[in-house]
Image (cartoon, rainbow, N blue to C red; front, top):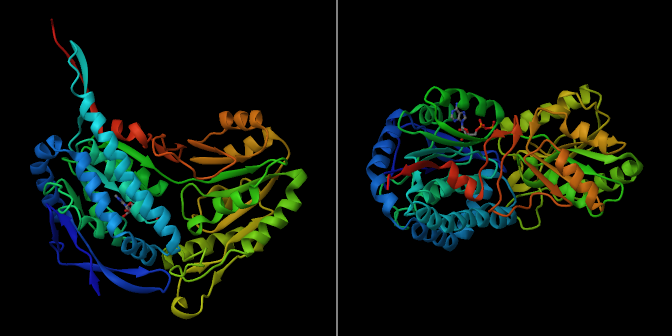
Length: 472
Ligand code: ADP
């Protein structure tokens, strides 16, 4: 079985312990690679390598290095897409066009900003501000969009002049491993960018606690994020947290194109995107007709082997996660929900017989306050609720502990803007879902996160401002 390796100080290394655990292809249920079970000793090597690399990395043309890495990824685009598909279960076409290409775009975008940061630091005023790298940045990324969220975190940290120690999710380590094999060829100094694989509670927690890693960027579940924030507070680390969501899709009776929009919001990546619209609020006048169309559209989604081009809906990332999602569907039934379509595991014949597939599931008849409507399920499950007017839509939309994203569907521009202003949410989409210019800020409110990343905000996060004043 293929062995994944850590990338430390420019070398691909086995973990010091020599221990590995298996990672599974969720579309077949079979283990297909071994992941290093890294610990503090591997981290110590990465920290030493990063400390040695920092002075050089700060001075180098980092934009060129990031562009070269992007070029190398692009040359191997098809390999990355296939590896991501096998590791994560997302259909191949989406792995290619979104996970891989958007990952490459992250590198190029932040390479562009790297040049600007250099300029910030060179002002010749009597009193001026330097934007300087912080030192070693720890980045911890999740399994749902493995390559995209990995690049999204490390590219700005490197562009800003930090060295990076990254910990990808142990559930989907393959594309981070493949990328780490390219960093020497891209011209990164040894130690500027290390990748450590292993368990969150072990190597992840060690990275969070390490005294020489003063800045941490994390994307993952809210409970894990709260634990990380608490641990990081012991050393007053700078922390950015992108956490869960329970996002509303709000459809008014004059909306156009909302069925397909709400469908993409609910079921993209098998519902495993923190931005997914898992609560579908529909104005009461069109509720019944919308429901009929939406359920028919959900039933038309093609479930299957994620490697096949016609597949629209692949596997859920792991057995454990599939069971968690199925548990929520059972809970919804107990809470009085009516399952309109889906509601269980699906068998895909052939290669994927043992895979972790769940049918797109639509549930109605639940109270707004029940657990199904309050907790993040992170699977292909959406609840339908009617609302009367703007006030009721806002009350329902804002009535959870989360505040990541919302989408509003209406042809009335003034109403759309009123809703955008009133929604407790870091991101609002009007008549669209999950469209984002890389230059715009990204992040959540309430239990969905702390801080903003994206565009300049990411560079600001990964730098310290220093005010320098000279007496003339
Ligand atoms: P989920 O979305 O399934 O809840 P997590 O939030 O647990 O996933 O995982 C997101 C990332 O955080 C992964 O890379 C995981 O290994 C890491 N992680 C999990 N627990 C910890 C921890 N205690 N400290 C640091 N990182 C962790």
